[in-house]
Image (cartoon, rainbow, N blue to C red):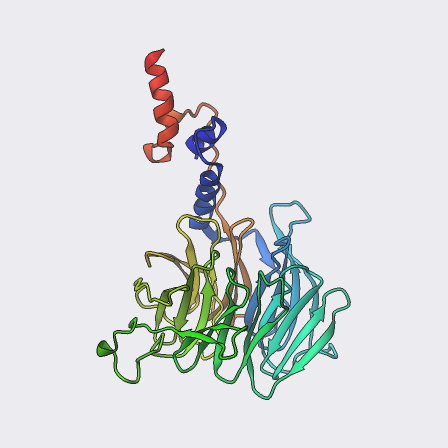
Length: 376
């Protein structure tokens, strides 16, 4: 890292490379932070988390008890040990609390003044953060398993929600009218909401080679319920998980299964599974609830990097904080845990570039200075 910093100062390296290297190091060193607690408010399992993208400071949680809580993640005390306090909660005594389990909460992507929630009580609510009152309530005939607002849309304010057996939805972060959905029938579909027919394509795990697929499995993304999906930050790929204990990576433009092998990804959830993908790292990482742990995979090679252990029961959701490369997870054990990059070991005052291991030295920086030394 010293080599990267020195090369950046000397103008020999791209500053983005230093940022990517440090973000990647931080993600690879994630550990359960014993000095940071998240105030325990929920009396039952936590199904969903969301951190607002404007400041990355406020986090929403939704629980099986219908309760919604808003947390402040900033350390206002400036002490090494602190608790992320709940600023408010929509508790059981609130007149507009959801009657049943809250399955998804999401901030309005452009302003912390509004957030949304959907529930098994067949409603989707739009909340005014300041008054903590619903600005609007949508009632559906069937159960709402998931909803999502586009992070980039400027020409529409559509909220994608599905009833009955569609378990996961996500807008593309690249194309504001493109939507991905995952269903209990094993299918993943891409939609263009401007088109009358709607559906652009149905993802096929066999890439059209039907001779290798049974008639039942043909034209399906998974051999089980598809209960989780997430786009990569650039929108070029889509990651899906299913109850067939498989995770698959798709080219979002062509719909092709990239055939990355992640091994067995244990998934026994009967409803939506909320997982996350890192941002600004090289390589990028996927954080996937895996029983009572969180499995960390490299997105494009499928390598299992580590298992984050700390919960006492099934993990239902996790959310990545890209500003500081932190991870928060919610579980049936009613706890929200904070996973923070391990602190960097202090560098001795007399440390020099030559004393560093070879893999930490930027080759461009090293070569430039060694030739200069030879000439001198």
